[in-house]
Length: 184
Image (cartoon, rainbow, N blue to C red; front, side):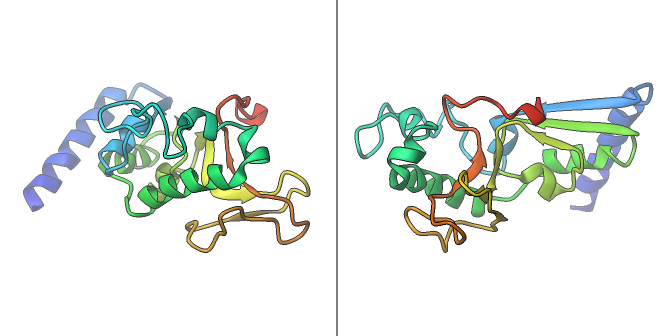
């Protein structure tokens, strides 16, 4: 095991040497980086959206659309709960750690990710733009109450705001919604 750790450090060292001329490094990541953590990609082999319909006969893209959180929040939260449960049982992987490690060697490292799992931050990356949001942050679209959650275990099937009673939502971009302007 020690030899493997030494070899990995040597590989990281070689990458650092190749990149030494750079002052800034941008990592762009998507679902593939978390596949090694055991999370399925969305459309690849074993992907979450490979089937044409959900248990209800509705395409997952329709359920996870912005309008659906207003009209059928229980369906949205059902499938968000399934995604969150998979994330909860997984952990960031070596690729996330290597990216975080790069911050120790370069003055400007930015991670731009489409992932909502939060693994880059958990691995230690400080400068992360999670363009599609973070599923562990929830908020009320009515009064803007917000909270960071470790998991969804304690949430009801249609969780509501403790301040105003409106249905809360995760701080993620659903299908059909615009990307947040502050992250573009």
